[in-house]
Each structure stands twice: as C-alpha cells, then as structure tokens.
Picture 1 (cartoon, helix red, strand yellow):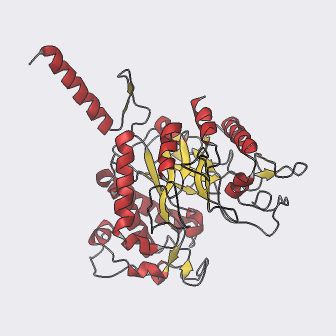
Picture 2 (cartoon, one colour):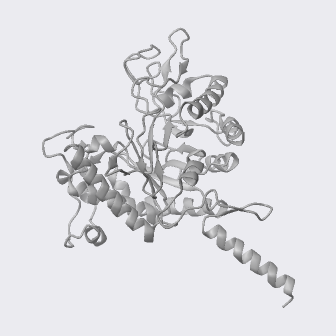
Picture 3 (cartoon, helix red, strand yellow):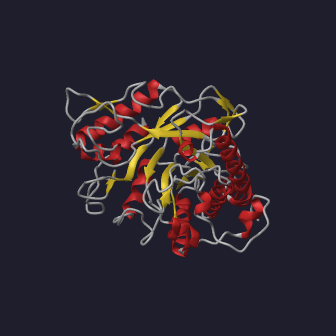
Length: 420
C-alpha cells in the first residue's frame, strides 16, 4: 500500500475515533476538546461550555401520541434551527407531566432514540436532557418494576408493579397536590427512588445525557437531613448506572433549588442549579421588565459552593436561568411585585406576547445582565416551550416562514448572541 495513502487512512480513522468519543474536529483538522467528557466526569469548563449554549426545546424528541400539551407541528424546522444556531445542550427534550402511560408505549422510547441518533450523526457532542418532575399519578401502578431496579437497591427481586401510595408522604404533605390521584412524590420514600431510578436509566438507554429532577426540595418532605440522604442515594445510583449505560458514561443532573443548592458533607448533590429568571415589572412602562439581584426569590449570587459531583471545587455552584412556565394569574397585564408573575403571566408567556423587536432586545439584555451580575450564571435560551392563553400552545423561536408559520423569529438573535 502507498505510504501516503496509509497515513491518510490512519488519520481518518483517528479522527473518527475522536468523534465517537465526543471530541469536535474542526474543518482544519484541529481537535477541540471543549465538549469532551466521559467516565462520570465533566470538568467545570466543559460544563460551562454546555450551559453557555443551552436552549429549552421542550419535547423536541417526543413523537405523536406522546406529547404532554397538544400537537407539535413543523418540528423538522426545530432541528434545522438548532443546527443553525449551534445549540449544544437541548433542555427538556423529553418528559412526562403526570402521563406515566407514556412509559409503557414502545414508541415513546424508540422514536426519541431515533431522533437523538439522527441528530448525533450531525453533531455527536450535543447533550439531550430529559426531565423527571415533581408529580406522580395513580397510573404509575400500571408499570412493572424491572429486576434491575431491585438489584440496584440491593433488594429481593419481586414480580410487582410500582406502588402509587408507597410514593406519598406518610403525613399527607402534598398528597393530591395537583388533583385527586395526582401528588408530589416524597423522595424519602424508597418507592419514589425506585421509580426515579427506573426513569433515569430508561432515559440514558436511549441516549439522554442530562436529567432535570424538577423541584427537589419540594419532594424532600421529611426534613432536611432525610431529604439530602435520599437524594444522595438516588443520584449516586443513577451516576453509577451511567458509567455503563450512558453513551459517554456520564449523566449531568440538575434541579430547581431556591436555596441555592443541596450539599451533604461538603459535596454538591447536583452538577448545577436551574431556576426561573424572575422578571421584575417596570411599573412606569407597561409590559417592560428588568432583572435585579435580590428581587423576590431570584437565584443570582445565591448558589452554594462545595465539591462538585465530578470532583472539582467551586465557591458557588454553576446555574442556569430559564423562561419558566407556570400559568397565568388573576391580574393579567397588571404589575405585582409580591408574586412571581410578569405582568400577570408566566415568564415564557409574557415573552411570547411581546413585540418581536422587544423580544430580541430583551434576549440581548438578559444575556449580558446575567453574565455581569453573576459569573456562575448562564441564560438558557427559549427555543420551544408551552405557553398559556395564546393563539398557539407553544412559543417557538424559529424564524417565521412556511416551514414554521408560528415562529416568533428569535433564531437569528440567539445565533448572533452566541457567536459574539
């Protein structure tokens, strides 16, 4: 064989190996390790790199029959947009909100895996995030407990389904919180940890590399110490499973933590904290909002430090702020600094209602403000998220056009912000 040809083949094989391991290879053949992690460890710099290119793209890898909040048309344009803007962390890409029947549907898992695999053929470094929320319903009793769940917890294998009542707080806290037969699960109940472990592993098996665990503090109903111990046990088992199940041997875990973080014996339980933006109304200018350190329960300059799950130490935990969705108040279009609404709307609904020019202006403002206000913080861009009381069920950042008629046209703004 010609020596030069042999060298070229070896170089190509080497570059393909790097791509499979999560490295980025530039057009010049340079190796960019800024998105590389494996074996249960992600450096602070790499985690920061992902958070700096994160976007909420709710249910983007879910499929027909498996959506929580109605139809999701023109979704092909979302994947085009994600590629165009250079997104690296796809938040809330799949989840269930009280629809445990999804987990019994082969299409829920198979179609999501196919979507992830297809996108990874384009960019193998992109992280897709799933969410396991603070809700469980009676439908969970239709799901069999696999043997590997019992084995992970050192329990005898049984032939049974998950138990709804066994996940509830023994003193009745947050039982039927959402509606009759739909409660906040208590993480200190072992059955809750078994179920969450089951979901986390199933998600990792299809290519998920990050999991948002909802409101972790709300689910810790039996006191601070018991809650910390329960979350620590669950997350340890999830991360141990990731070593052999996750595509890069690693899972990135976060939660909404208004106290700034969960720490046990100096160790942070979550890789980073996530929280709503917390928009403050500018009273003199209707519909205008601003960000302010110390407003309401905002997370800015409040995260706690410790040893991260990957072993590095930080003075304060990294965090993401997002355009949250939680419904509409009874005082629409009226300001109220005593609640967490923005002019009576949740954050993403408020954002969706604004004129296009102000949406673009606000993204620039929020990105720069967070960057200057707290060096540990990152703005998660709004890509697709459920909104309330609008002409469509989702805000979409896509450039409006025939391929996405309901797009709100923040795509180019997001790309511009990230490129600069």
